[in-house]
Image (cartoon, rainbow, N blue to C red; front, side):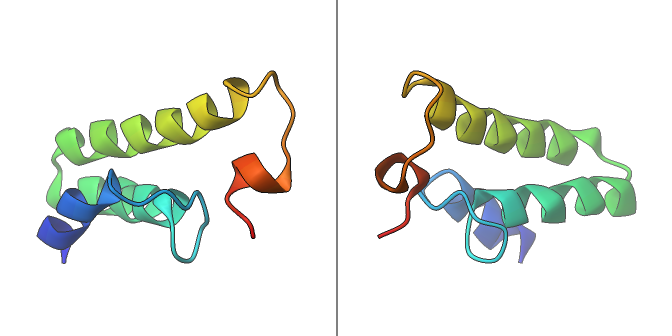
Length: 70
């Protein structure tokens, strides 16, 4: 499961908790503790950074179009 999420985590555009990058980041924070491998936590921080970059690149305004909702 972790291998699949590593491959698909950066490809997904959805920032959401259930089907998106936030949920994948939460998984990797827990997985880092479980495996005692902080590289997984680093990857989770990278995903969170991508989500934050998405919002700040639109002049600080969150709208339906840049949030990923349709």
